[in-house]
Length: 114
Length: 109
Image 1 (tube, rainbow over the protein chains, first blue to last red):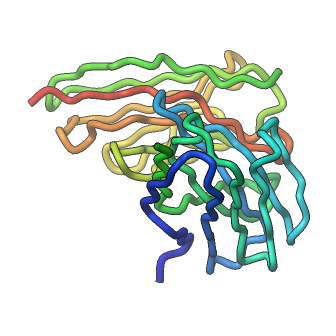
Image 2: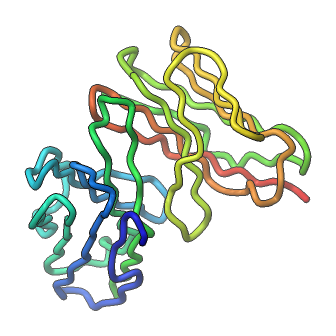
């Protein structure tokens, strides 16, 4: 009954491959996010979806493509993986942040590109 | 440019002492303030939130907010080794959440 769940938790893959990370939340939240945390531990937003619509798309390579089939799911597909993509990717969700809410994170997906 | 600043640390505090973590933010329009704790290899978890000026206490944790000076702090009383983690300050600006880079806290046994 994990609130925000993402799979896989660990992923080791070769450069040039295409991979996906799936995320699901059962909190009934309207907004979902993808964050990247690199080796320096800085948490950086990549994308945000509200009710299946993209609302934040920070400067990330277009090899990264989010897909939201419904408001409970936000998947991240990465094409042509590069060494620099190695990081921890966190999915998160929230209700409207203007109403005093905050975001809740999934357990993370550790991606290693070799 | 919206910014949330934290000292990266590490901040070393003896067990049983008070750990004081500070965060400053750049936009006076900020509405909500949060502290997350992140253990190594784990995801950030919410531990405190504060909306109004003053202090808010929850167990050994106290959040302090001063909107005039644009800072928010987290005090941890009776520090335990299990408090060793990275603490992330987060601020909400008009519907967007901005995270600081975190402060590493190390409690010395």
